[in-house]
Image 1 (tube, rainbow, N blue to C red):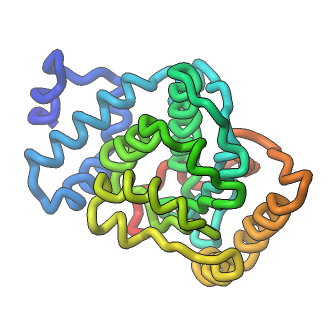
Image 2 (cartoon, helix red, strand yellow):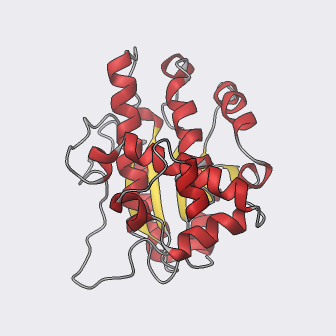
Image 3 (cartoon, rainbow, N blue to C red):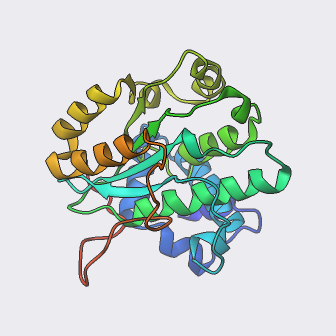
Length: 251
């Protein structure tokens, strides 16, 4: 921890920093960094600085201006939250303001997912539904770069797998932008599948209940009305005493 403190801009860690740096989390970062203490300390320092940058969103002091339907939709039978988003709801003509809003939307959702892990799960699943995808809506690279920053530091190794559903040929332009920023291990977790294949994969990896929840939303998003969003950043309804929060188990 002393090495980590030295890497912070002012040479010390606040209570906010220390509360996040649990023993389980520090050991997990060390494992991901192949037991290289210097690399793990650098990565943790980057994560802490990122959390400082977004502290008002992470603590709930400020609610983002929601931009899409990207949210925690359900949870698999092994305790992994499932994040879902459909490109149908992507906004056109990004401005500096809306790009920042979109980043803060992602921050709130990923943090909600990290707090929704149960049964010792340490990762989440992401379903990106390409229904309605238009490359003209995604020429601004800032949101992609911001997401890669989140994946590589504060939520490092937090992805179990990502399912990209019904991706059109034009999606490859966006993928070519993001792929070089991902490690080999993370890229191997990305699966391009059809809607029917996604339902089967989710049934196998997350259980029938979670698979049906995602399938229902995908089906509705292919109707003129679309799927109504129940709640952002998460549709999960937690019961008192339900679960173990930001789990750092093996799964």
